[in-house]
Image 1 (spheres, rainbow, N blue to C red):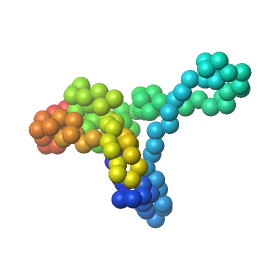
Image 2 (image 1 turned 60 degrees about the vertical axis):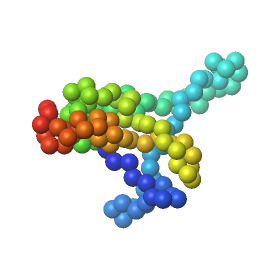
Image 3 (image 1 turned 45 degrees about the vertical axis):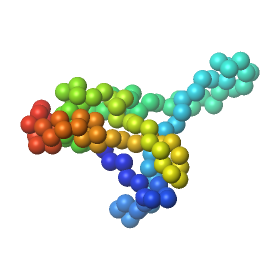
Image 4 (image 1 turned 90 degrees about the vertical axis):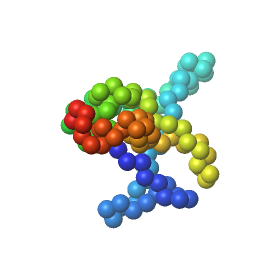
Length: 118
């Protein structure tokens, strides 16, 4: 998994296509739960965790990268640890994916070198 950003603009060109970083979509309570008599849109937003859990092991490994996937399967970190709050001087608080070294410190070496489960 890669979190790419370009200074002052979170759009960039990849493979000849203008792309943009993903963003979180907040999941809120319904209008009914708020006591309002307004029809809900009926849009059901699936969480990233649920979507990822439905993917095959091969797809999960491809998305995370071999080292990150091996450490995750070894319970070195939880899925929730894959998103951390950061402060961007332009956009304010944002969420970013930490590196394996950011998650495990010096222990990441064993995964980068292929010493742990692949």
